[in-house]
Structure formats: C-alpha cells, structure tokens
View (cartoon, rainbow, N blue to C red):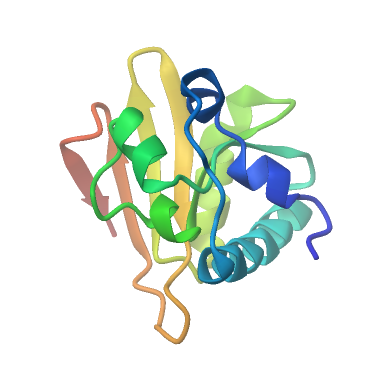
Length: 146
C-alpha cells in the first residue's frame, strides 16, 4: 500500500457526492491506482512536503459531469491532479520535479480561471512512459515543452 496516499483520497469526488454518482474503481482500475500512488509516493518523498490530490480516479459519469475528456487517464486510475498541500507557491517547483524525475506518461501544468494544478499520469501497465510535458491555460490549447 501507499506510504502517503489512500484509495479513499484517490477516489474522492465532491461532484460524485453532490450528484449521487458512484465513483468506485473496478479491479483493474484499482491496480492502476495503486501503481499511481506508488509513483506519487516517490514524488512526495523528493518534494519534501505533503501533496494534495484534487482529482484522482473518475468513473465515466463523474468524468462526464466534470467535463473531462473521453480518453482521460483519470478513467483508468492512471492520473491525478495534484497541488502542494502546504505551499501553493511551490506548484511550479512540483511540476519541474516531476519533469526531471521522469517515468510519467504525461505531466501538465494546468490553469483554468483562478485554479491551477499539476496533472500527472502514469503509462498503462507494460508501456514505456511517453514523458509528454505541457502547459495549458484553458484545458483546450496545449503548449508542448521539450
């Protein structure tokens, strides 16, 4: 099990609760959530302070309700949106740490309105990480980083 994260944290959804939508992963999604939690444990260790998961696993209905993309890795339990729990000003540092550390499928520094977070996804089981790094200010237009 994870040192810093719990399955309940990774599956918590205010939208699911307020709308009465089930948000329970199946066995395959749970397996990938555990892999994601293991990856995030390493990030947390290196970052040196708590990381808050603002969005982890999403069922199809929850993903639709929050306006997520149809092929979101949140659906597979392979992605989380995260922020520093104590020092929001360190968000860019968290993003840069993930880029430097590697092993990710995708990392995105996202801003939408007044909200800002880092989306990080791990590769599907058995796949090599693509290590795509991007930024977006609207969730639609992305700038790829080298």
